[in-house]
Image (cartoon, rainbow, N blue to C red; front, side):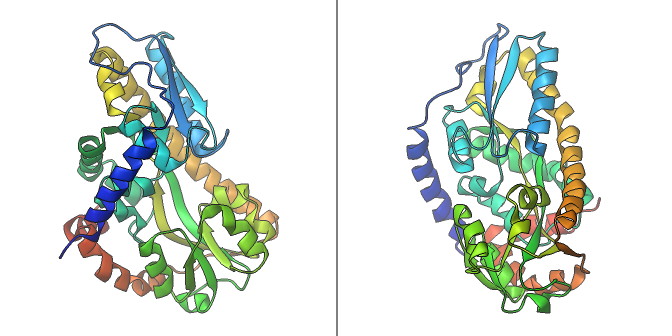
Length: 340
């Protein structure tokens, strides 16, 4: 079967590289490998703001790197997509115009179709499953493909976490409760198919339009990680918080491969060690914030539903029948059946 993602990947790569060429360069250390220790500042792009679980992980990395290099290498954090959207940041790292970034895996599918894997619903049972997969040879192989294809090096598999549904209609305890609800999805065919399979009237919509659409009842439902739901104040326009846990979203910390290769071996090792140190810090911050934000959303007046997820998993099997062969049946099966 022809892989639909192949053409999409090539098109995205071509368009992406053109767009990225317009970005202002940040990579001060880029070039051939040096035996000399580097002194300077790395610019790190964050999609979220100060105090977010992304920032906590990034800061743990920066502090450790500064310690390991006796203050020679520091990190500057750029919040809320200040260096460009996630797609632009990944493209910028690819051509070495941006040093580092923490970004969702969505834009990476334009370079490596295997990354569309993370759009599949109920792929990961829980955090333990997700972490085990990403810390295994599967995560290593995915990272290697990105490095080879796009010249972007994954330093650590950080995370956005699990996504959950909210709506202004009713609590969701079974897939049948979603029937007829006007649900906003991200601009992803896999996600549209997922919510259609669950019974909702699924419509893709750009992110900046979502709050107003919910406020005006053009849409009745959306889905996001709990910290995002709280940060955007969806509790003002949504009554029901439903712990559907339908998608696990990684947010890898990445670096321009050209930039990484330009460092001395000692500095490369320091970067890798700092990333290894920061990974559990960021993941714990993600877990802590999910617990904290669930409590805060209830305090803001949202009604909480924690449904049995097994009927939801069964309802989305047609999504796997359609998309697993496109993404790679062997990879999908390996992840779903991974022992942890």
